[in-house]
Length: 314
Image 1 (tube, rainbow, N blue to C red):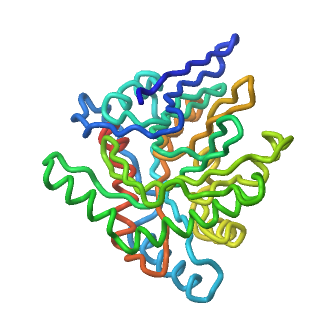
Image 2: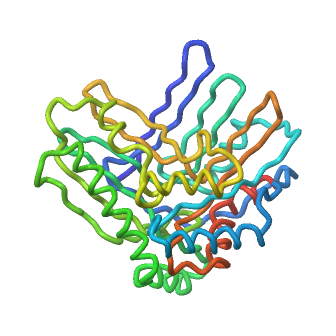
């Protein structure tokens, strides 16, 4: 299905939103074209590699102790004293990484430029739909090698275990908002190909309870399990303990609500946040840590998710 586009601009020109959406399928995109004319802005690493790997080991100790069984751990890349054109930068990103839930958002002097591939939650009539992502592989230019990557992701026991943990969590979240007996996993371990990565995405759906409000649905489902881990409360406590910066807008959600009450919300990932007044540029990425995680591989996955922005800037 061809994606449609929604653009909203406030009268005071303080807020703008661009949204590519499908209803409710996620489209596949071709491999990325090479970035052109990088801006010469080098992002710094907030967390040294040794410290990142040490943190993953400590998180696995917490998993062994029974505190959590999966944790989404993220790190920040940043730059200071930066001057740039956010609109132009977002357009450049769209050229090399046309993600289906991309967003450009401005609030006063702060800009959010998102190349998100992930839907948090959508409502279509009586149906509530969640599509968490867990499982990532790099896309390759060679078609045969790229298919090997795709098939390896599909069959990877570790990635499937991570994905099903979050599917189970989202089933429980949706059960708080939906009619009893209507929750179904419409697709388990679906593999979707975007410009730079293959992703494992599962789809959970249910019939929303009559009379439940948009605010109540968010209260019962936010934050999304794919960005916390499970169980949620304990995972968030550990996130506060291990991550070096507060997430802020990152791992939140942006979307739209239709007059009829339908809505579509993304997950704010693969996102550059720019404070034009302070000249501060921030990018956070991460992944799910489980007992089977290999710390070096988790670190490399975090870099892969940041790669498009890093290349475009530097």
